[in-house]
Amino acid sequence: MVMGMLVTGCSNPYVAHSPQYEMQGRMVSQAVPAPRANTARYEHYDDNPVKQVSQQPLATFSLDVDTGSYANVRRFLNEGIYPPADAVRVEEMMNYFPADAKPVYVAIPASQPFAVDYELAPAPWNSERTLLRVNIQAKDIKTAELPPANLVFLVDVSGSMDEPAKLPLIKSSLKLLVDELRDQDRVAIVTYSGEERVALPSTSGSDKSTLRHAIEGLDASGATSGEAGIRLAYQQAEKGFIKGGVNRILLATDGDFNVGISDNKQLETLIKQKRDTGITLSTLGVGSDNFNEAMMVNVADVGNGNYSYLDSLSEAKKVLNDEMHQTLITVAKDAKAQIEFNPQRVVEYRQIGYEKRQLRDEDFNNDAVDAGDIGAGKRVTVLFELTLSGQKPSVNPLRYGKQKPVEGKSDELAFINLRWKAPEGGDSRLMSEPVTPAKLNASFDSASQEMRFQTAVAAWGQKLRGSSYLAATSWEQIAQWASAARGEDSNGYRAEFIQLVKLSGKLAK
Image (cartoon, rainbow, N blue to C red):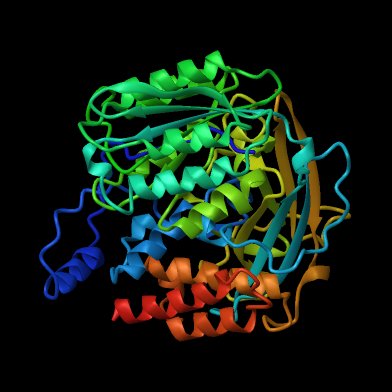
């Protein structure tokens, strides 16, 4: 079963001007004709800084399950271009990979949508630091138990989509999704270019030949009237609304909304209003020129959906077939985390990734604050770099900052709080888990395979962003860490990752 998605490129005033990106572009242009000016847009976020626990003991953030950054960075590297730093979001890279072997988690109580596990190990890039990895594993749902779906495919068919890696890829991808539909699922198709139209009214998932024929008949031409297309898609979603079911728009596109909405906030307001009625929105990005990732990420976040980037049909299969439950079925909405560090045991901390998901501490208990949604069967990974008591800190100890130990809890390193709402809404719920030194590995090599591999992915992402914390770490070291934790790798994702790390090192020279 599949949910409606919006695939598009949008206009946002964040344009990637990376010296490395422009330098690599010039290198490529010496061998091939000069490319058109790249107008891709990425939102800028500064890396999370080191924080002193005595001053800021709480780390508060929204949980994130997007994976689009990894596929987009892979596309850059395969084109021989070093990616701009703003295209790299480390948390989306860590959360891209399915577990190589099913991890052993504590049983998930019936009243909770997920379980929490954690592990600690020395940081391989700094002997004076310790890594804390927190894993959140959501319940999966059997296909037979999934609610019926009311989906709307909103497809950009403007002239710029007339390239093999754009509309033809979208058409092939949507056909993969059609293969997963059940009789109780329904799909409508809306297109937009110079004008918007309903290419196919809501149709049963049992009528696969009609759905495939409608998808195959999509052609690219004209301008991009994004606003009108979105409004028509919502009309179709409202017309076919299934109470208690999955009601989602899937937007697919490559470029800007150059007709209609020109203000991001106006677009986000519209999507938020429709989200509150039970219609969610996900985005699928394709292409490179005019690719407006900044808006695609934002509208998917506001729409309580997911952002994915398709650089190949195999990636479409991963997103729309292999991980369909995770992508489309929500088991926990407005999921937030707040981790409190014990100043008696932890001196400093630095959160790796999640820059775009940071919240104010007071937002954690405020149910009016929107946060991330977690899909069925999804595993969410969070990584912190800690300076434990006795390790050399980045900042000198405070003369007047010593605090009294918390009686009875002095052995805890931290306390994990998670808050979420049921998919149908209502008041939030809370679960908590203490972090103790019992799960601290004596060495990085003795840590679990999953922790070692995800640490390699986090190191790669930080180095791609030019992080000073990884300045002394080589691309070869990162590839070695990943190779040692590759495991069975039944889907080949990890072998591909190792090659991407090596390619990054060549392009960075």
